[in-house]
Length: 314
Image 1: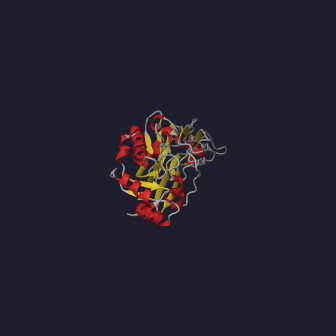
Image 2: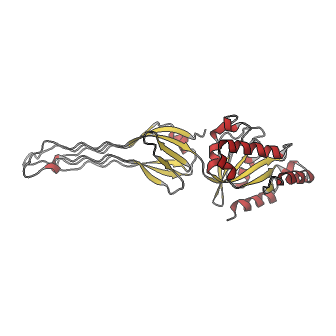
Image 3: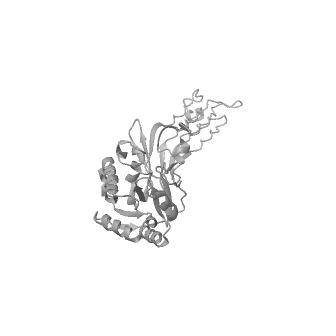
């Protein structure tokens, strides 16, 4: 199951305490410094299930630095911790309201700073204090309470009613392996595929009232926000394709009016199920919407190649 929103506490490691120690055979302090605590860095991954895997650990904590040792030996620094999150993830600090976003594969940033190591008593020696009886405690590691929200980033998004053929198209166009069935809501979570460097997202089927929580609700409408281009799928099986189009557009606008400004074409799908005459009639009706319309079928290689060329063109 794909999780798209979780709360996690992040805790960087504490710095190790400095040590109070003295030479046994000679005068003077020899307490070493403590090591620095591990910091937590966030990096990007294309694995959309990384957030789901992370949900098994409600607290992510880096190790603390080692305490100082005798003979002016410093404690070891703790290793920094790298946490991988999917592209499109938004992190919000629940206390400071600071927001971080993972927008590309090169994203890497410091989320929680590890505590500095405390100084040992060797560092506090002086001409007026030759036997310091104290050392410095290590600093506390930074802690954050983070809300993590995933909004997928894709070049193209397949939207439309359930059973409009979106998953079949994704499978045919890319190497993705979505679940496919001849019944509504086969797709219960987004699927991603890649075609010549372009990311294609299959957004789970929308229904009338989705913006108010019906069907799969707003859980997946949010993913449309990060899609650059919409491929609006309408099955040639529907009796009123214009009504189907306007219903989905209404739900997109009710969720976020800006979604209606995204560039879009209409894909008339499953054209192998109707006669050529019937398909021409439906295309004529859909063209009155003022949108480019492409007839496609996974059983029509020429139409699939044409769609691939459209998606991958510069």
